[in-house]
Image (cartoon, rainbow, N blue to C red; front, side):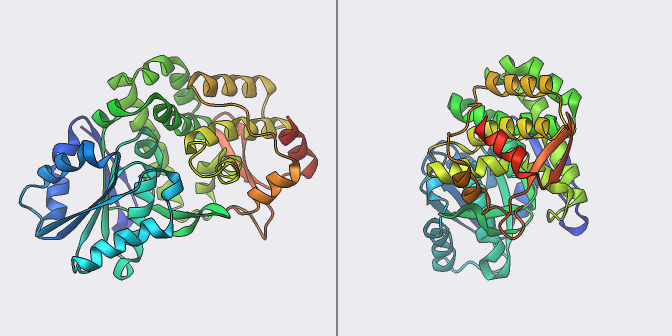
Length: 356
């Protein structure tokens, strides 16, 4: 097992990475001791791992309630969120309860948001079971649900007490879901660590084959990068925005095509190609670097072409974005491989990038 710390003063917490952790860890047993515990999962992950996680808690909790939500991005809604609240209230859970999110990014976001607002905030733990959630969405305290007008526009910052990334759970991932997770892996190399991007490029076949050592290295380095950024800018006042490289375009793709038709990582993959192309048109990135990054994204099994919408449709979708200012989109661009920044961009360059 490897431990990476997210340093946020009194809100600090560890990320545990390794095989077999879902069957029990001292850290989780200690957190659950004597408390009411809710395990929030979905109807795909629950049958695979809920009983194992529950058994790993042993006799530590005072009570355990299971909450099963419908799987998929299309169900990241108020209705699903209310299922969590209904279960907590019916079981008379108090302010000392613990919520455990067992699943991918959708479950993590919803369970975390429920924990953030239930009785004005209760503790929660992330147990991510997808690559995307292990390298990105489970770390950093962003929680949210979607709205028909925009992705993740309703939510709260609420840090977990613990993140448990059991690498064995990745063996049950369909290839498409694994590729979606690799988008966030590639993103971390592109924005923060050229040597890491080199390693991703070199190890791509092993990563797609779910080779344990390659995956463990990628998960650990991605978590290190994200933990460092979050520690320096917890609430996305500036630096943390770089973690959204490719996401302004990607979120537009998800909203515009209907949540769930493109996986989040697929939309981010195509969005990173668009963002890299835009970076080149702004004079920041050499064309050969755009070509290289596009090839790495394609090698991960991700789409590299976005929907062919008119410029006006793109602007409509991208104006509903957390980085937008008064409805005008802003973009994370690469100044070089390993260095990113949030910028307003000239309309002409954006039109050219979207047309391409």
